[in-house]
Amino acid sequence: MQDYTKLIAEINELKKEKNAIILAHNYMLPEIFEVADSVGDSFELSKAAQEMECETIVFAGVHFMAEAAKLLNPSKKVLLPSLAAGCFMADTVNAIGLQRLKNKHPNAPVVVYMNTTAAVKALSNSTLTSSNAVKVVESFEEDTLIFAPDKHLCEYVQSQTKKTLIPWQGFCHVHTQLSPQYLKEMKEKYPNSLSIIHPETPERVTKLADHICGTGGMAKYIAQHPDIKTFLIGTEVGMTHRLQAEFPNQEIISLMGSCINMKQITLENIKSSLLNDTYEINIDEKIFDAAQNSMLEMMKRS
Ligand code: 13P
Ligand code: SF4
Image: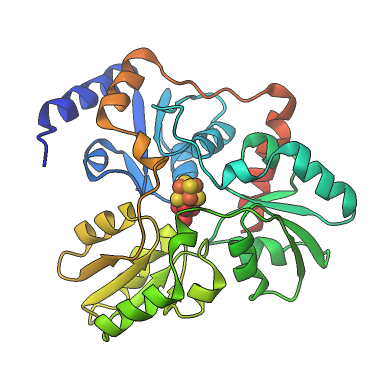
């Protein structure tokens, strides 16, 4: 492994100078955890940002996560080190398309996954994430809701509620790579293992899983099973590195590939971000309040 000692020390110095913190999503490259003030899933990080004293947040994650941090921390400067760090799933829905679907179902409240732009959140009644999706959906009085953009998360939530969900047809190209055949083969190869699969994965796979949860729930599940030696992890491969470091006495095996968006963030561009204030996240004031309300609704309802 490359020696990052000098770069890590420079970043830590710049953090002090700029009164900045670094938030890192679970999928980041392992060396980025060395400079992170908080590591977690997208929702945990947005909440953590609210509790930390600082002037600047450098978000080591993708664009929608940095926008969510800005929505919850309007007075802080939020920086995303690379504008190439988008999200394939978030790009499957835009405000014009969602407005069209809303027009077809005028009485249905709209819930949207964290993986959406601020403009899409602004058209919704509440945001949700994988750990609180069922609770948020159940909190509405109405029986029918529009759910965007992930059709697989929607499928999973639909299996847990009597409400009727109208899905947007979005998906993540990383989580849809996993086939039921491969999961079966791996379970045969490791007969005493437990499999944990992210709900962005299609139902034909999750129905074979021992446990379904977002990245935030995976460590908790492993900690509850100290006697199990092997875990099969069905989410972006970076999560496996993080879990293996946390559970060195258990074998953590990845079932998925890499998210190219997440891998745009490097120690080099984090340093440059701190030096040059790149790239600042600004949200159009016409949509800011509505998008922020959607995030605050999630917090109230979950
Ligand atoms: P989490 O909210 O579980 O971190 O998931 C975000 C994501 O983009 C998963 O692909
Ligand atoms: Fe988006 Fe999929 Fe990458 Fe998560 S893994 S950031 S949903 S493209």
